[in-house]
Length: 163
Image 1 (cartoon, rainbow, N blue to C red):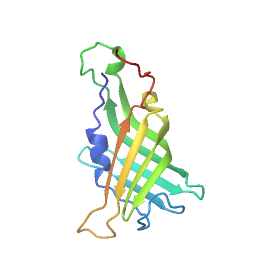
Image 2: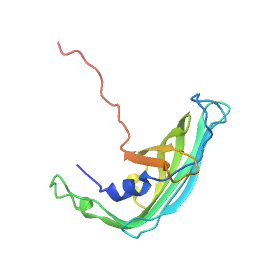
Image 3: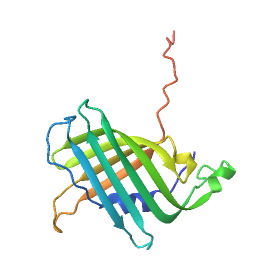
Image 4: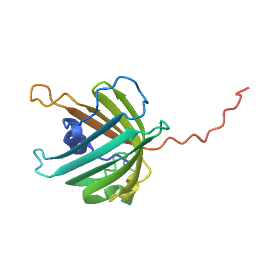
């Protein structure tokens, strides 16, 4: 099994904010979520995230996410398979996602999409789930953002009777 240490990547995106209208109904044309951020943590590498998603008149979702991180990304052979591809390292990463889903509830939004381009080619085709919470322009309650990368679900099994 391939595992990639995403802790710095996820931590980097955890407490970032966004701007979105405070709308309560889901899948309503005109709802949107967007934000642009540059930040760094203890690793002193610059991280940048920019996203923009909206629900169109036909209730489909349009939008993109761009993320970049200068920190080194390394694959790890946690299962001990000896696969040489699991020993690769990359000097930073950038990812472009096309959104195909958006759900907005008050000050929270969830966006989903597929990675269309990345400096790490193994990421292309993976699904992304981005969640954000806008807590206004204050320091008391910070805005929140988190995300994850997921392998696409392959539904190629055929149900059969066990008898």
